[in-house]
Each structure stands twice: as C-alpha cells, then as structure tokens.
Image: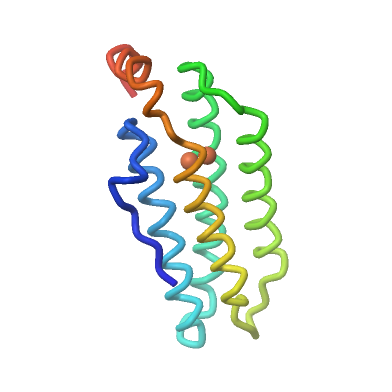
Length: 139
Ligand SMILES: [Fe+2]
Ligand SMILES: [Fe+2]
C-alpha cells in the first residue's frame, strides 16, 4: 500500500517535513520496484541502501532538533529509530536476488514509519520554540 505525506503530519519544521516526504517517497519506490523486480533486480537493494543511509542522517538531525526544543520522550523515540534501522538492516541482510522482498515486511516498515511520524513528532505544543529555532538556524 502506498503511503502519502499529508499536511496533517507536518512537524512545523520544513527540513524535517521534506526529509519525511523523501522517506515516504523512498518507501513507495521500494514497493513499486519490488513488484517489478524481475526487470531490475538490483534496484530494490539500491533503494534499501539509500533508505538506510537517509534514515541514519534523518534520525541524527531529528535528535539534535528535538533536544534543542526540549522535546520529551527522547529515549522512547531513540528506541523507535534504532528499531527502524535494524529493520532496514535485516531487510538488506536477507535480500536475495532470486526472490521478492516479502511485501508484508515493506508494509510493516511503511506503517511503522508513518505512525512514528504522525504520533512521535507532534511539535505543535512547542510552536514558539520551533519558531525561535528557525530564526537562529541557517541550515
Ligand atoms: Fe523520528
Ligand atoms: Fe522523523
């Protein structure tokens, strides 16, 4: 099932929003390429590796950002992040040219990440702090 970014999961931070949009785009690409794998067997693996690399960067960025606005539940969020990295790592380790990635595994990752974005990145209560940060941050 394809997952779409909507305004309702906006975090108020444009950088994080565009990173989330890119993550969801990669997940949709992964699903599409997985179905067409017989045409291009290396494409699925390439997307998985790109996803892993991008998630690592994104989680680092997010960790710094959340700390800077005093966002709560850091430990639980870090645990979620570690879990997603492990999930993608094992998808790469289990990858076999001869077979499709189990679509249930992809769906699990899609839904896990989507729910994580929707439920754990509610910066609305921190609106003032996010605005203040925006003025100070130049990247
Ligand atoms: Fe996150
Ligand atoms: Fe995120």
